[in-house]
Image 1 (cartoon, protein in one colour):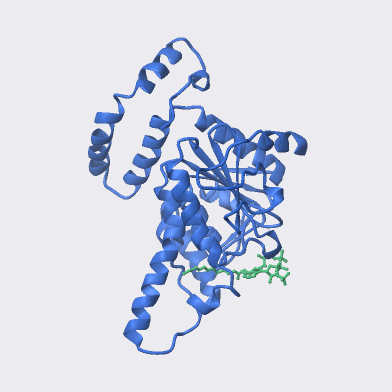
Image 2 (tube, rainbow, N blue to C red):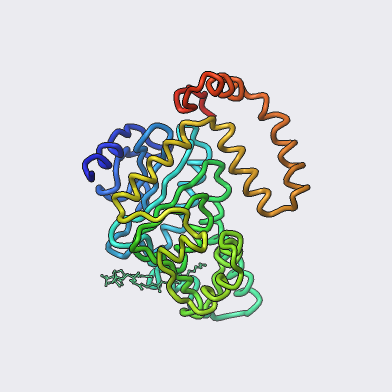
Length: 307
Ligand SMILES: CCC/C=C/C=C/C(=O)SCCNC(=O)CCNC(=O)[C@H](O)C(C)(C)COP(=O)(O)OP(=O)(O)OC[C@H]1O[C@@H](n2cnc3c(N)ncnc32)[C@H](O)[C@@H]1OP(=O)(O)O
């Protein structure tokens, strides 16, 4: 089974524009110029982003916060990519913020004038918020596959993704209160929109207790639980292929409008949708897909132009 997954991932021979070294799978380490991310294309139109500091449990150091923005900015504009899979290398998905590397910037009181320090801190927090907001702003759907620990910043990251999968050994922890912080890069804003129960969100964020895979599934944080990482990565790739095989005009329009409607009233969402589709409905993809549907063909058999 491991060989089959590896073979699937190894089919890649292309990389994102701007990346000088091509790489096909995670085990070789980060993909230059990145130092914390491994990027590959395991299947046609599928980009695989692996958090890659396994020896530090993929703790989010300064380079990571910057590289995620660069990576997803490129992905958003890459016509070769229609869907993204994100996972973590090694024993855990991520240990959250790198408490060693980031301490000097965000975890220590600065000296000097309070107003200027506060203004600077606001700028820093806003910058770090962008690290996960780029995932949401990217029009390509992002499937995240979590195994082992997903702590602190990890929850911020996954709540910005579109589809969340995990292994049976996964656990999730909104850890920030334990280190004296109110989580400030997305969890408090997005988790209540992901999980139906406001009470559960409050409990998790206020107590920092761990939530394990079964509860994550029951609460709606993840949509599927797999027995182990191998099965999860095969499932994630299969799901990504299903998405990548469909019209990119339809898929990206669906993501953009789902996120818009999450943050607006039904009336506003419908209005936005009408404006969106007054141009997007004119795509050739509609006719191609409708004909294939009438002929009872799988949409994945259609060739759609790059977007
Ligand atoms: C403006 C930005 C706002 C962002 C805020 C974000 C906040 C947060 O993310 S709060 C959460 C912070 N994270 C933690 O408190 C988790 C700490 N780590 C752990 O609890 C464990 O490491 C973990 C359960 C994740 C894994 O345990 P395991 O036994 O498998 O590994 P360890 O032996 O503990 O660690 C292995 C090496 O990784 C280093 N490491 C782990 N976590 C971090 C971290 N968060 N920051 C820096 N380094 C980390 C650990 O020191 C070990 O290194 P070494 O000793 O060199 O082998």
